Length: 515
Image 1: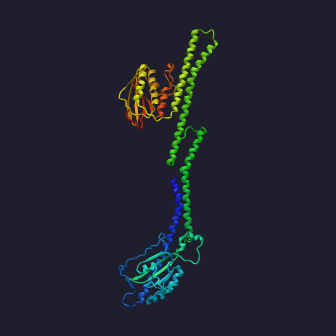
Image 2: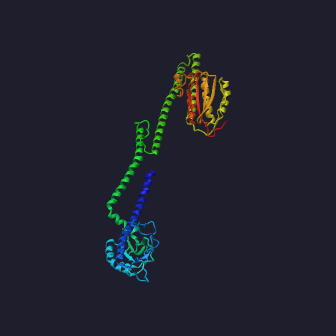
Image 3: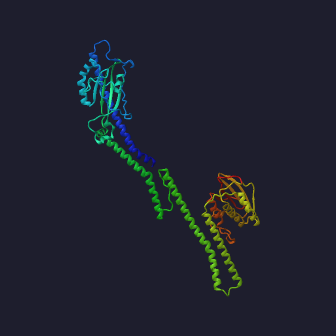
């Protein structure tokens, strides 16, 4: 989008820049043409001097600062540019005290027809000046001096000079021409006539550059080609935007519509996202779709398990109550007490199941707090409680590193694992630790009956338990998993020769320190 916007911004700026460059090129083209005309007139002037000057001394004013002439080429390079300030209109010619040189006047008379014919073709203003800057030929100003004009003064010193001056016109330019500076300027060139380091005269010519709008109309076919190229560029930009932004977004919309209609389950990442941002958007949509699908599957499985767990004791309770209702007087007292005990046991199981479900719901919806905790403090707080119940906790050299998990969450995790060990006939738990990257690896090894190979892949499934008759709900490890996940940790069941070995990955706090 940045490239497209910069190109859109650059088109008008580029047009103005092209307009100015093209106008400047017309000025330099005019200067080159005036230089060519001056060079021809200068050669003609020198030839007349050779033919008419019969004295032994060289004709003209000596220029000692000029280097000796050679047979090599000496091209005159255009120097004018619209970047430089435009000079005021040309000053008027001034009267002279000393008349022009007679030979120069004679040459001026000879060249006058040539100048007139040239002007009719080139539309240039041409004046011949003698070695002192006095006009010797031209439509007007003959006999007057241009020696005080800056470009003429430089030419009288033996150097080529050119300048751009404001143009004076009796008629105002058309409004459309106001877009161009070329309609209001005139190019002046002063070309010295030099032979053998002697200044013989100056060719002073001027002309208004061709107007850019008129010139563009004359080359309208080329302008049409350029316009077609620009139009093609704009169309290419539109197609580029469509390909890089619109097409991938439309593909995402089509996938979401298919998911809405049930034709597709997961949103897939785009194969050709083109841009980095669209690729990120596609990956985010795909991740969100996968998370929602997993959450939906989890809720469906959870609902199935919950209905099953509630249905079993409710069915048992319903049967017992129906029997008690059907035989209120005939049922023996022992049998009646047994049914009532079963009802109380099922009620207690439902109560425990509801409590564990509430704990699991809180763990799933837990918003991580910024509280810190330490493993040694958590284990010391639980050690005496489980020692009374016959479970010894053995540990040594546990690091007091600060963990990024709330103390109550860490306590619930440890309690669930210790309760699991008690349910599987363990009387000892060995606790060791180690560091792995930015996590503390805490290993809990008990000496109980362990987990059979057939059940290793089932223990983290909600409601799976092998101790249902002794009050197990199958939610302890699921609660532990949810709590650790909320804080960026995890729990794994590792291989063990005896008992069960659980490995906790606990995230370290950014303020980690020894406790």
